[in-house]
Image (cartoon, rainbow, N blue to C red):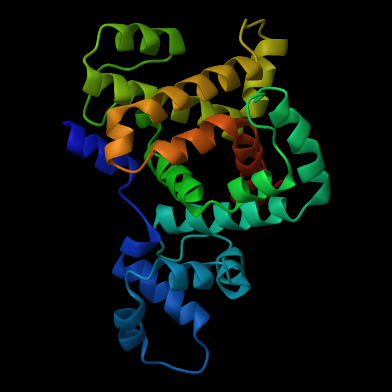
Length: 263
């Protein structure tokens, strides 16, 4: 996979580029007084603001949740975007969550103090939610969790092996590894935090959740300063993910337990 393809994998899906099937589902679920769906699709296609307002509407969310199979013909990106945006919104309006998150973030980010306004900006950052949705789509193929780039044969199950590879890689490869370490650690801490806790407490593994958080924050920060991030307008997104890593992981954990796999 060349550099261009690697960047495309990180940004391959967005509300501006919804598939015809996703867009039609969105319109049919949202519009109640018109039936010229194709015309509406032509008018709003590519308009991220309008599509974002529609996907955030409770009618869309309820339509998906009312289907027990949650299939409905929608793409994984559409589903992850829907649940992520809903989860970020819920947490941004949860006073207890906000009050607890700020001191946690300030314990690791001592340069620029976190306050409520800064936290809300993170939770409302659609570039962050879009990036994370793309990450979830990629890792929904389980084999991709352990591969730096698509099509590779070599797999990595330990962060130290990824770091070792980065030390002997060229600049393009380094960027891929930095991104993957950030994504890998965020995915595990957000979606499988109980598994990490179980392995640490009962299987006597040496790494706990904080181990993954520290590496995730570090390598998202390294990705943010890379020239490829700057060329593709990813620097600010990586900075947000680095500095607010713990909060984004908590939102993923909330989404996973409440919407994807409710108990």
